[in-house]
Image (spheres, rainbow, N blue to C red):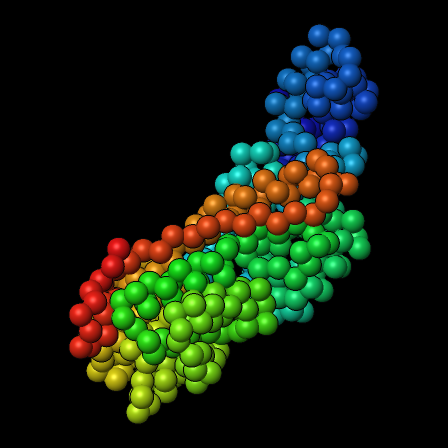
Length: 351
């Protein structure tokens, strides 16, 4: 190896110009030989490949994609990677992206709108092929659309008629959960919920309300409990709901963090699950099968949500003029030991 090569000096990485000089051909010939695009004589191609190997030359993927006016990276913005739901969703996106030759750039906005918009601006600046986002408002999707950046809203929607979305059938699944509790004999069913302004919260509340109305049970506003955004806030809200003089006999937590708060609240009050209080979670989480009794839950396939969102984004990239569409996925209710009929009821657990 020549002492003048970049590998031997260790001062800088080899460039296309270095490869061309060592191979004794022009830079344009070197570029064609390395990319496989365009004609290059066999002997010249072999010299270029040998020179690249000797120098340890690695093509600059970003520069190459910009020259071709394409980018094989996609941006993903999620709300909280400490929550296993969002981590699994991102894993689904990553798996599908990798299989299709794309690289995923991941940002956790920590539930902050400014961070979400900052990430969106960064993705536009680096010309990502598209963005998948669990949006906090319509603002992020509207910004990306104005920049002609394909966007898919996943888990919740703010711009359903302007961009694509992938969501769970929240209203119908929530209705099935409440129907299940009613079928066990419960009439005082509390809904522990973080918000009702997004599609997730509003649809889960709507399903709960519809089930009670269909069963001829008046919706008691005091049983719709605002629980905040953390386990600690949910724990305190649940303690307040369960310690009242006329407590609910069942509690439906609208996500896995709220369910953890409810579980801890029951322990704080010395309540036995399910004889004193039945608990259901809309999200499944690993801890729910590690406690006794196990927690009855709605199992959303967050990994499949991520995969489906990536598929939808690729379809949008390939067909940018198509009308926006929303894909709605179902979720499965998994009865476990945390639910039973209320005390004094003859109803028992139901599959």
